[in-house]
Image (tube, rainbow, N blue to C red; front, side, top):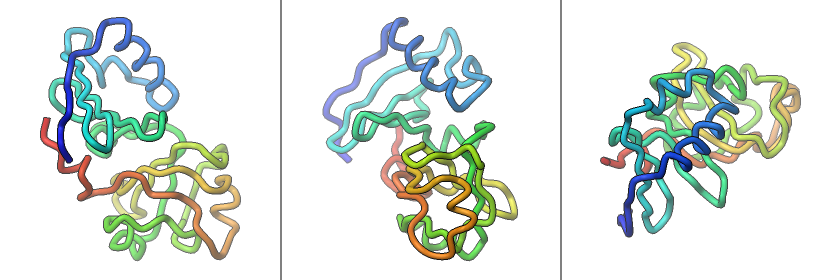
Length: 162
């Protein structure tokens, strides 16, 4: 992943970013402190937002996704999908989430929503994706892809050093 450009965000842009994060998180001021340095790094694949040199958000196809590094610090209160332990080895290699591996899903999830996948035992974030079906369908369906995996443990964003 090659860095093409990087610059600090204006206060106005930081405010807009915080508003976007409020969709998922309650403690936005802890994620982006008032006096924190917020910069954007434009690479050949993604735009990554850094808060105090930690990647917290990335942009892909005009959609903002919280990073796993952020999710390790604070898990959102909604759009959570829990998978069984057998699914983890596939997900950390970039596989999409299949319905049979899903143990629990937020019933308010709708198709197209950003979702956060955690493991059944420790509730640790494994990947971030886009829902391909509703939360209820994820639980009730016995086959098919439920979530498109866009960011997972071990990928380029996970390994990005600010």
